[in-house]
Image (tube, rainbow, N blue to C red; front, side):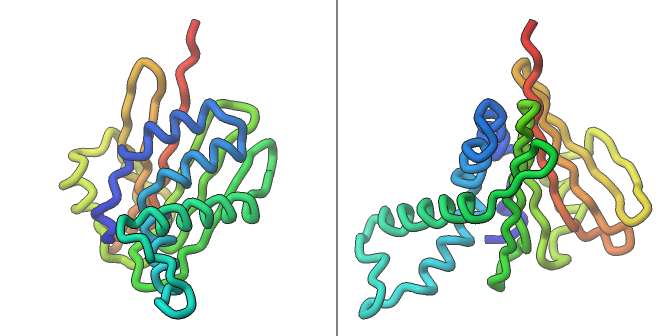
Length: 187
């Protein structure tokens, strides 16, 4: 998996579901369906497998591996969840290398139906030029003290979702991606 395999738009439906659920359930809905985390955990499980000690890939269809990945994501949520200011958070480091991402955080507000997914990149190989080639021109750009910000947006009658790419202005490397989803109020 490379950073370019990630597409923030794939997460929008799961963030929408998460926004309707209570904190821990919402976070679990996001992480369970996040292809990047599933790939990372799958790599960890495969690394632990051996035919004599732990034949975890015994089923040829991969269902045993998929079940183990889901079980581990459950454990990550149960063991890693914490609450701060009426917000449920799971922050999970991705330390095994090589892998293009270094950290995943899922955040679910307990006061508002908002859901967030934040992904930190491990190296400086994914660039703003690649982001623009994939998604087109940003909806908005901004500059903070330490980085440039490219914002992309999806609007639909049910929600607004944004992806904010933090970019190092010196070399154009993407540092972090934060995806948010806010359901629209129905009147």
